[in-house]
Image 1: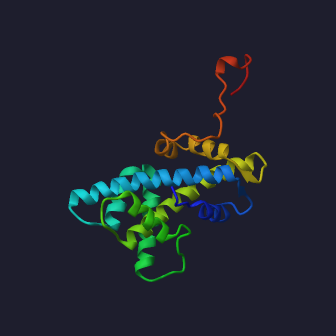
Image 2: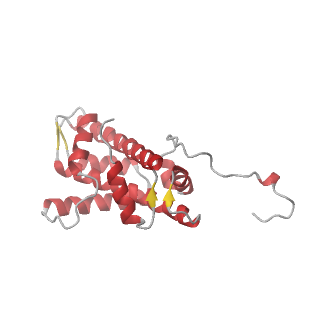
Length: 196
């Protein structure tokens, strides 16, 4: 898996929570989440492209793959971010370029598809969607870290953030992170009269 978004994930955490850091294990886990999500979206886009008989992965295929992979607010906001980024990219407005590199994303797409070419706008769209989802996860995990009065985010914070969000949990329900177990005490074990 030679391609990695780890250093770019660290830039996202600086944007989302400038006062927090990401430990090495959490950065690795977050990179694995990005890779997993990218593979799912790319596989769906490849199916769409193959069914239409095209040889190029285009923005429409990535956009459709994102809308079929994601649910609820994540779908709506990711699609909006991706569309806005493509509009800025085609309009040559580089004022807000993606943190996740477009060339790296294009290379990642080429690794997993049968199509011979990848349009740059498709890579821009996917890069921004992956960046948005990473920012969403890190934002929620950062709240957990801050609540615990810590400055370094760990894998457990990411795991708790995903488990606490219904849409993220649905998206990553098949992914196992190394952050321990979710805290849970069965109600029978609490003393009588204890408020939960």
